Image (cartoon, rainbow, N blue to C red; front, side, top):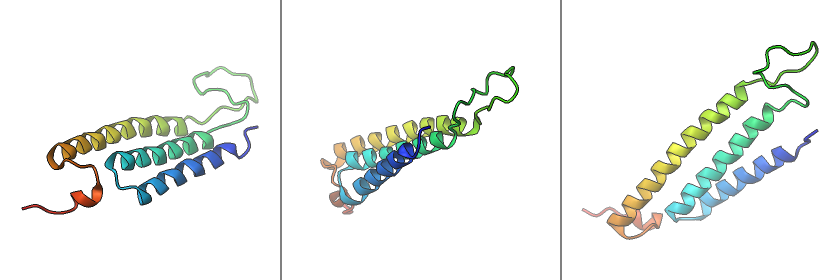
Length: 115
């Protein structure tokens, strides 16, 4: 029995990510905060799909009465990981370009329009 520990860890990860987004102004730290939120959501999806003593759904010939694990949360998590990696790479690429053009990663200084 896993208990409530994974759900508590999900809340901690999402809370840390939100705190980072609301309190920090560095673009790299903002990307880390978004990644923390993503990890918390992924852990939540995996935890929802957990079945105690469940058998992986790839085994089609099991004994009668054996509980199979639902594969949908696992598929959603894999899709979320791929999308999250692409989003993180894009955010970090934007941060590099902004640093090259503006010379800073502070979000307050980047908001000022120059023209």
